[in-house]
Length: 154
Image (cartoon, rainbow, N blue to C red; front, side, top):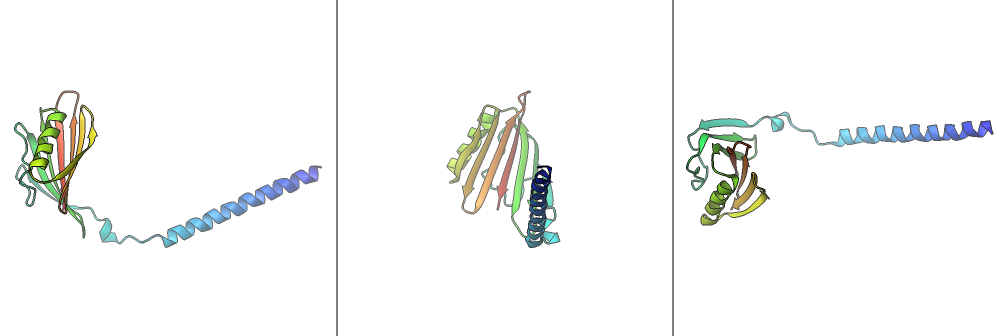
């Protein structure tokens, strides 16, 4: 009887070792067959900061609302890929007010838009016009200050 227990334990242990062997071999195949990323493809984007000055090619209709402060504009150009044009600012207006402001801009200028996040203090909007897309992230803190980030991708 004691001998049968050792046989069963040996079989179980052998099966576990065999399974681990397959996992190791399979994992090495995955790593070896994974596409290699060229070093320049993983490079950080080139950032061009223009401060309060408008960025070239930023949609003219995206005018910061009255009362906007701490305006910062910059472009992030990714190697061999798209350029993201960014505008950030703060305001005392509510998230709802800023979302309505930009939804009207989208509607008046032929953008296809939708609201992705719609709660009291946080809004996220998405819009497209041709091959240009825009994303807006709007968040109001506990002190009533609203932070807005507009990203336009070309």
